Length: 480
Image (cartoon, rainbow, N blue to C red; front, side):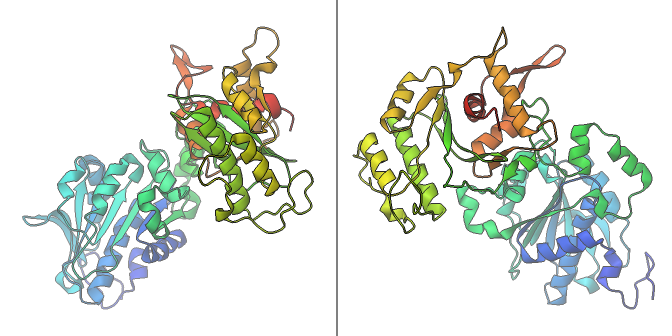
């Protein structure tokens, strides 16, 4: 029997009631298996719709096993957004299922009828998340998560509990270019977790959904998406998380430049280094391969002496060899070790071995070391110390751009050609572990803004890893 808005049906499947798309059904299955689920990443796949119906679904499921009067929270960044995106839509749900109202105990919410468990979706805004610190929710749903800072996520996680409920949930839905997109992208898209979240990393899941996943969009909506500026079109239509910031030096850098590739230790690798002490000293580990330039690791240090950084470079080279379980058998010019190294094979636990002796020892163990370092022009002491560790080091400015052209701007142009060349290929590939380099090129390393717009000259500041890449590219990587 078909249900009307006011008359309860004799029987109706939830799938018929919610009418989820294929992608929304996938999101439901994923959210059932993970505590923290993000859905969307573009405009138009029915993100807000899925959030409210998923909350209804979980309340009904809990009611079916005896959990009555359970409360979940549905949040937006402010009340006008909550009213437009959720309150007005919840009021359109069948009246026989429940209704939107306010109570003295719970405030405003959508309340299921007693015969369906008497649960409620409490409607809240996030103008001050601290007011929810002592509140309990069996589930939390946040609409447009990237419009909220990470502190809100951490604060609300503390409220994710309910007596007798062993499977509380957190679900978010969002476009990829809200003001606070960076932390959301790191956790769900890049799966880069700070130490305090690493133990629960497996509880996070991302279901990417595009407007093409929503068969109900009309032609006018598609026309709007297809006629946006490139940056908005890439974000809203194509779900690109890497085009959100305007004025970037490398504005063509996208997720297609990010990789999980590892170096081939049968091939040489080199370093790009931007020196610093109070400002960061950035070291990039780079391998030039037949069809790409791979940046596979990094160091990012402050207040470190030259010797400390070089020792860290040698240690990183050792750790890379261990991680890749590489052996030196058949490789000329280094040791004859024929079994993979282990962590406890590190030869300098006391830290007292000199750099030259440590480098020789590592080579005897079969550890490949950098074959060259392209270093800041002012870092004479660092270059001298690198040579002591058997790492040839050169001033990146040994050859300057011709005429009156700025060598730094010329180096930036060379890197841009690696980010995306004239044939649309992306020879530059950066491993996801290079967090500082990725943070700079995707959000921090920007052009100066003048009275007539952005100038083709970078601002000083958030540029140390990017400079290291430019130094190496100018000296070594211009001919791929």
